[in-house]
Image 1 (spheres, helix red, strand yellow):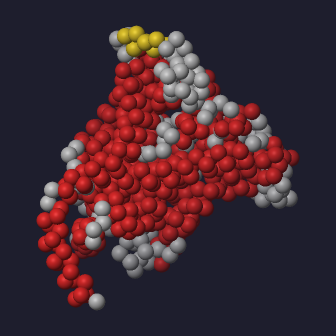
Image 2 (cartoon, helix red, strand yellow; image 1 turned 60 degrees about the vertical axis):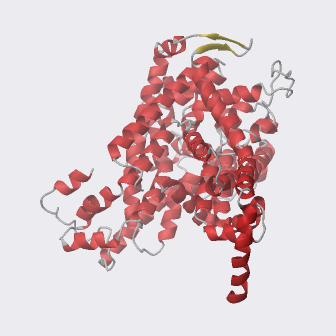
Image 3 (cartoon, chains in turn green, blue; image 1 turned 180 degrees about the horizontal axis):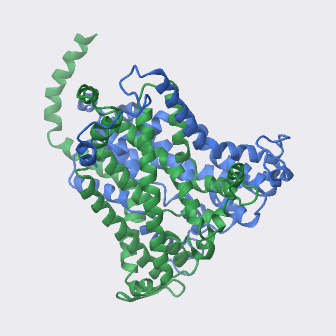
Length: 313
Length: 310
């Protein structure tokens, strides 16, 4: 089978080499442009143009009804930073991120380490932990809203077993943020855990054996071997989580509508949504988007510094 | 992080028995404890889903009573047809399905071609093109959503607009706005590029010697080898499209075009106590993804691994 087929290609290769010397490069280039065009034009029109346009709109006064546009310099930025609600939104976003991301990451890394053993039913545990990630945030936030129900909801019923009178959760200004954070931690663990699990499987076994011979117990092995080697994965998880967390919208929209009780849970994305699609002030919304973008950019760069090299994955 | 771990001069006292037991042969009690911890965690993770299903099968009186029951005293399967009759969940479901299937089909086709070109065809401008895709991947939704909305609204000749896109509503409140802007994702292009890079060069050369053109090599030789990659991209696209909320929320007004996530949120805001119908609706909104996920887990995980570990 091998011998007869091996001979002809060899001879054809020689002939082909002559035939394709110039046309091949040309044909491949043409094919490349044709295959790239639909996708790249789509990205350019629906992502490239809008991104640039956000930065332009932020420095203009655009009237959506009249369709007029005028240069505004830094007016929009001055306006949003004079707005106490925007400052509340920035602060709330930071608070939300500060509690959600590290907590979810810590739980995720512990679960990943626990699951990185040849356990029976390991796949089932992994599925259960990952399931919240693939289900729609809005739908699942509505389920949490039902569980948070102050009078007949699941949480306050369970708390009552221990004699605790539960708060009003999403409608109590003191607890609304906590409610959203609880739900987001629950939803965010799965993806982080899967990334950690993939990284853990890349750690060579002999390192653990060497550490064990040197007398390191499981806890020491975790801190001295596992965690340092998870550096690149930690960076990746951190950046992805920060970006996701700063863009959180659905949980807040559903659980604490209209910026929450007494405006206690408004976040940057909600303010952008309000400016753009309730007040139709596209210029202010764009300025707010630019601020959000700068936050994300700074976080990405700082994250890169902090966790060390990220490209060694 | 690492200095803290290594600076302890003496190994910390080994906590009694349990622990990950990574190197096999862990003591039995440790294993049992480990399973107990994992079972408790898993239950906490699936509890909201269980509560959702149980609530959707209780009568209204039972849902509103305190203390709550765990299992429905009478299993009210009729809640589902009733909920569908009470609110247009059926329409919402169909809309979401049409959009998610369209997005998946378009994205797989266009992103595969683009990913293939980026991975296997030499041409001038390949590096800038790749950088552009990577940059597009990093752009947050809220950095582009305002102009996206304006682009949709000012689409010339649609929705009563003139040739400059003035005067009407453009693509707003139409299938166009729901389907076209999100139809191609940079993530899909990037994933396809990574997958195509992994195919051996010899295949391409052999096909070329057999006289296939570049499109033939792409469509008939390379892509058929990529079924797992296609499954991965298709599932991730479907998931993102099915779960998408913000874009459908801002571009639709009429009930007829609402997707299920938007419909559910709107239902909750008007009917504040019909929890059993709302939970029936959320079952409709979550179960397709859960079922899909249970049967295709490894493709999902593969996708995240590829995206994560470059």
